[in-house]
Length: 451
Ligand SMILES: Cc1cc2nc3c(=O)[nH]c(=O)nc-3n(C[C@H](O)[C@H](O)[C@H](O)COP(=O)(O)O)c2cc1C
Image 1 (cartoon, rainbow, N blue to C red):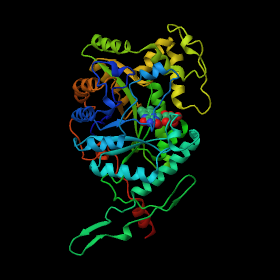
Image 2: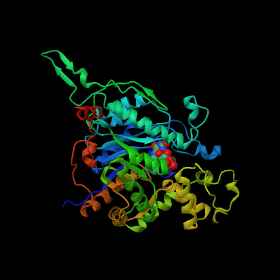
Image 3: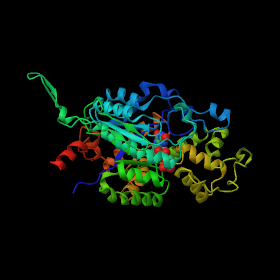
Image 4: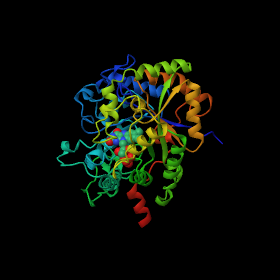
């Protein structure tokens, strides 16, 4: 039997995932609005045979800090809208998939369905949608709302939103278009279906003014790990992005989400679990340690404190001793998202000082950081991959472009040598490369059943 292969995504965060990345000489300081930078990243990832590149997104400026000084030092504040960006990059790449984030809380389902189906056509079958309900609490004012909806409401709406978008994507059956110049018949109206959806949150008639895309539907990705997030993933997603820092937590999560699939009539391999890993690669351990230390030294204390302030709401943490553990660990308020639990548990388990905690989080914002040689990084990835914790990884380079170059040059060949990663793309669409089925058209299935 062929050896199971890892799926790899490059999670591209403008200047890099490290909070001080934009100050590092290996980064591109204006990355968020530099198309040449993104072209280079996508082409590098494709050279490394990555399945996909991914950008996170939120529809507004995120000011999590009270401190204006810390805010002014934040690098990730101005950046492209993802679908627009990926449409441009699809023209300068051939194989790599594009995962764009879009919000079910703040976007319109018809326009979103049209945008993503367009991206799937433009890229010839390489589009994916990272479905988020939007975690940040301060963008509602951009959309005429008076507050950020509660998580339960956001997730309930997300289920309905996904049904609508998928229904719109199937507006035309696969063989609806005849385009016979001889007879003059362009398409078969019997194969066009209006959705006529009326639900709790949405009312959308359809049909979509765009035929079914090369993948049938773009790949659905989900990135919430709370109870309702896991349920949404089990019901609808084909890949789930997640953040764990220990093998045991990652295994428990993997078992949990895979275990939820059966009740939706789905098989475990129809949902790929992709935890994040932020690798700091050196040719020797010393070189990797030195790279990490160089980055950590670039974190300004006001920025560091601002990254952890939200975990201790209402507390004047600036007065705490940076070189002692936090004086107490709060219990996250009900309704707080799963990230709060992960971070506080990590701080308690490691007995980090305040400085160590913010330095750790700044590295990859609570994701898993591995500092070492290509062999050490491959060992860790293999351990998770072969022990029921991951189907692959979201690789989160700390500094861009430098750390993606390192990964492609040094770690990919090591994974290939071990038979854990492909040596050529298998298919032409993202679905084919990820080993995911092309979804059947909803209306064709209904009609076949009725016949
Ligand atoms: C790897 C990863 C990427 C994410 N990307 C985004 C994003 O781009 N935009 C966003 O609003 N939330 C993003 N999230 C957050 C989740 O979608 C979700 O809102 C958050 O985890 C809180 O929900 P939860 O309580 O269900 O986990 C991401 C989470 C992870 C783990």
